[in-house]
Image (cartoon, rainbow, N blue to C red; front, side, top):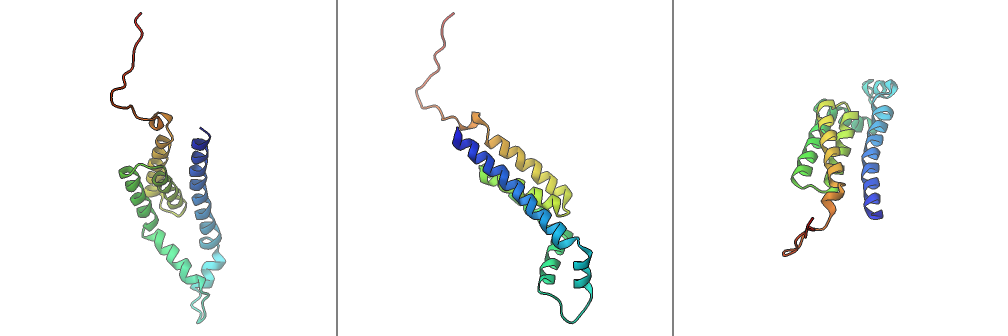
Length: 139
């Protein structure tokens, strides 16, 4: 049981880490007005990180993070494993933080439900072997 608990904690910690990384990108790299003004100033010399910032901005303008989260969710539904559910929930949370609310929320919800289902103890019990039967006591 200790191994199952550790895998659950690792999966949910990974989802939260994805959300924290997305929040760090949003609040530290995208939203500060000074960074946006510096890149949009039209100067002859732009810092190298302005191109990366522009790629991140184009990603949420075209809903790329939400689409990636939905693709991960479809993978998690087709191949129900803990890592695919974790990926779907993590990308869904990151997409939600990075302005892709509708698709990110759907992926976060579906990934979280799949992750909870994957952690269900009833699903982890060993399968019955052929020939074994439950014997009921007579009243």
